[in-house]
Length: 390
Length: 159
Image (cartoon, rainbow over all chains, first blue to last red):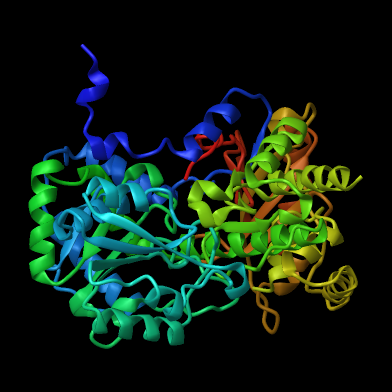
């Protein structure tokens, strides 16, 4: 049989991930220093790992409530109120998910009718456009520009809004650019969302990782926004818990209930030991988070200075753990630059277009890697760039 | 804490150039800051952390619980200073609880440490008693776990 024709059209039409392509090349090589990794290099703090082990020891291995353990939801409500200044009812407005990825998928599937338009800023996390397509929506990219430090401006957004627009996805601090959003700009965007009756999905997974004292503002905390916002967060980045796969969505009861329908039939509940670990993270992880944040900040200083010194113009990001370096001065495309750098100097950076067409001319360098590795990588990259100029 | 001190505590051998990049300042500013920390006595020295199991002929270490008689006017200070000055003594702390001073002593052999305790330490006027515990194996020292965890296994490239 020709299985190919049985594959659903909307799945078939999703292109192969640029990251996956690149991953396979890197995987086949030896001694590569990778600045292509989008997860913390720190071990999960021991207290958190120990809490998961303790959960196993005491046989805490059954299903939990579909929404997640009540205690975890209470802790999440307190944490979100304290750090983001938005109050959610742990009984009806919080759902614990398998990472933010699942939460995002739930929100899209709960909201989108075929043909609805979903706006998102680009360059952006690799899953946004495919997730919209999988929910039968139309992904509409709003390009952001280095001249504006990759912030989403209300003007750029307004230009893409149509009568079919239903949802706006935000991700600040942003993967891959490290961009953050100012309160003033967010307020303008919020007014547009109210005016055009858009629902906002705000993925704030990097919110703890901001630098130079930058204030993180959640759009959910702005006037008239809580009622139309799904606040998405998780434990992967700040607590270095990527493999635990725990995230959560906070939204008004009607939306939470709708997402819950998808979640309960598709997933049932998030992993139980991981939820135990997440409780520990919220109870006692703050010190570890600050230690890691500080470390990222120092590495960011180092990598941004080094990239600029070698002639790759890089704006200083105020969040996440990525430097998005401009490579157009070398005369190469992002992909050519990344492949030649990998081939000649064994340093892996992800080509910008993996994060959407507007990423062309850039490469993403993750600094979630030890400073020792970053130092060697920067030396090799500087050699590479110098040799290109000859 | 001062960011420079934080970085030096992590790696006292870091070059001024690297420190300047991490702190987003100039090499001259880093050197001047270090010089000031040293002059002011904030930074008293730079240490190396060694896994003794990997160095042949590593010294023998003992922790000695010492009870002493406090003195009018000086309390425990004079005797504690006197004990601290012996080169065999690596560390000396005044403790709460069942004894007064915790003294960490290093020697080339078990015999050498034992001799120091019986002939020098115990005979000091004011020392009432000593209890000696020899160190058998180190697991963590100065915040460094001696058996290194393998690096987390991560995908070579991930979104």
